[in-house]
Image (cartoon, rainbow, N blue to C red):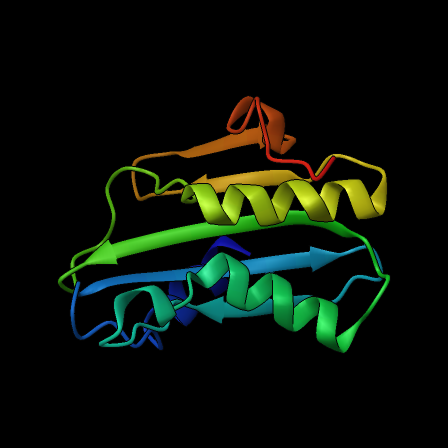
Length: 132
């Protein structure tokens, strides 16, 4: 999945930041869905790779739990030496998919130097937003 995330990062549309991110999502049924970040000149209108992959997975396979998410990023065409972590919005989305599945999602943050594994999003988002 790390290889897939690296590969799909090259399909990112990132003319403004030149920061290309790829993500792979492993579903409980064994399917792997990928996504890359998509920017827009109206900056908040773009989407991160993790959300592209997660939303695509849920659209194609509703109610199939997410087991793992991989994220890989590069800047200016150079390989990412250090792992890239999801932004706050992506962390919130991952937390909701954990709630839907009733289980923790393994999150692999990959770079050329190492891979960091978070067993569940809580370590990255200890006080997530919840509707009352």
